[in-house]
Length: 85
Image (cartoon, rainbow, N blue to C red; front, side, top):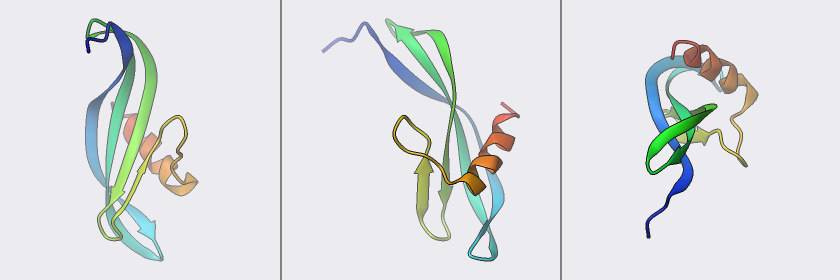
C-alpha cells in the first residue's frame, strides 16, 4: 500500500541525564522527536516536539503521544533536553 499523506516522527536528538527514582539518582535516556505532516515522504509542516524517556534501572519506558503522557517530574527534564535541539 502506498501512502501519499501521513504523519511521521523523526529523532533529532538523544541524551543521557540523571533523574530521581525512588530516592536514588539513576540514568535516563531521553530521545527528542520532531513530528511532521508529510506528502510523498517529504516533510512539509512541523507539528512540534515529542519526547520519550527510558530508565534502564527500573526498565521503565514512557513516550509522549496523543493518548499517553510522561509523568510531570520526568517531563521537566525532557523539556530541558528539548531546548537543546
